[in-house]
Length: 167
Image: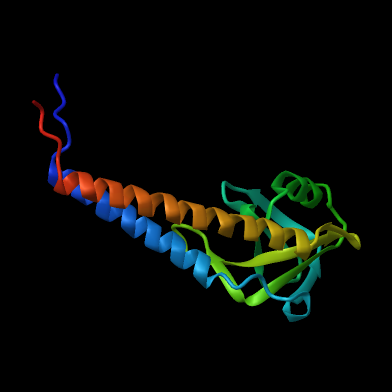
């Protein structure tokens, strides 16, 4: 089976997709204003009811607390946070979260509140400062990603308009 080389319309489509990804990544970087201050966060304390580690974070529920929580993987130190939550059976866990910031579980109507600081039995496992540094690192990556896809889109666009002709 012989695969043909991409045609100019195909390259043009890839160029447009690259530029769209670049714009989305750039918008993500520009619109990021940092995490809320600790004083702006709501505090909840309770014992762990259930915990579930997923690809994008750790979801969990605290006893006698109406909210369900998510510690996003982009907050860093996911294994340490997961281990601390799992080993906290019967101990109080305190979370600092933004009541205005929820994330949904894919395929469900469940909402989880993002956790920005977490402590077990009064000992801070992941401070807000460290979480903010990790989120900021993600935003720096978004800027580089934007630049890469912009250059890729321009290159593919030029190639689509000026295809190579074999001699």
